[in-house]
Image (cartoon, rainbow, N blue to C red; front, side):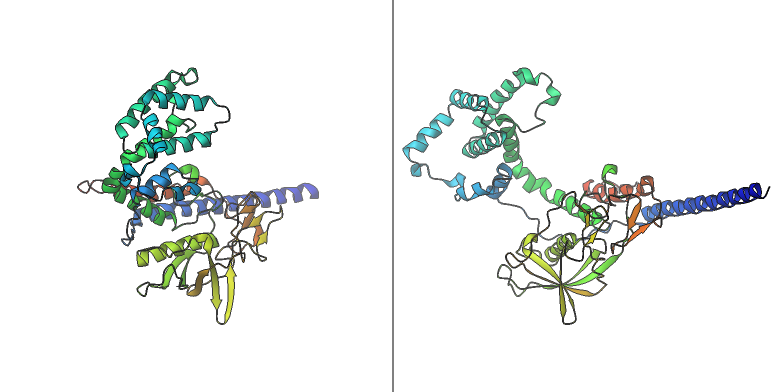
Length: 416
């Protein structure tokens, strides 16, 4: 009887504790959802007007980046503007080659013959198509007729019996030619018509996305337009205002450049993400880039007379139980509001940037049963229960950033 009484008492205590935990969990979920909808109703589209000059490229650099996105070694070949090349400067061999290229039957036969070669790789086909586009960019009518013939031949191939599957990959000369042809035809339209609105759209979305955490490994974000890329395993985060001092460099030594800038970052940002926000703040403040690439600079925390270099991974990095290294963040270094950060040029062979792999993590941890705060401290059983649906309102709060910029000036404001 005593045993039965004790068992019943423990069972009642366990049921009571479970009921309390469920009530607490429901209360927290209601609060999170209520706060999300309140933020959605009260949040205003805070667009920074100082976007700086729209970084349009001249036609030559636009074409080179489009035709050779991964072959930087070829850009030095095109030192002259192909539109202004004097015909008298061509030697006889170039003249003969130009005559052959302008022979439609010969050119189509050469392309088909090359594509039949087993050692003619996809990369070779893309390079050949890009060089051919440059050679014919002043003869777009002729290039268009070549495209018509090659596209018709591609449609008649037995491997392309389903039209819906065509042109999904750039694996043939005609597919790369078509991409380059569209780029050449749209270059003027992009610059004169949609270039500036599209740049403002992307910049505004970046501003909205950077207001919340972004996992640098998976690229998932709290503020996003796509549910599949929603960072719902979001940690607690706060904004940190930094006083950034830029070192004077030969690439940017103008006296009009402001080198003391206040930059807002998140305590869950990695050092690499902080670099990107610092560079963007410099561009917005001065209207021109700093003059160095991200992988050419270092950040240094200055506390009195002491300096400490900030890195994504160093000897103080947290290593989880399964051997995965957690990337260092602003919170990891315990950087507070008003801290001074110095930006200087990296010394050769001094430090190297981290190449992320499966052995690294940022905000999304591999162990779902363990929770880690921004300082890297590990807690078990103390983290809040979270579900993805709690953060779906973030998708709605991000949408006005794209809707308001995409609408016609005379249209009424878009409401979600």
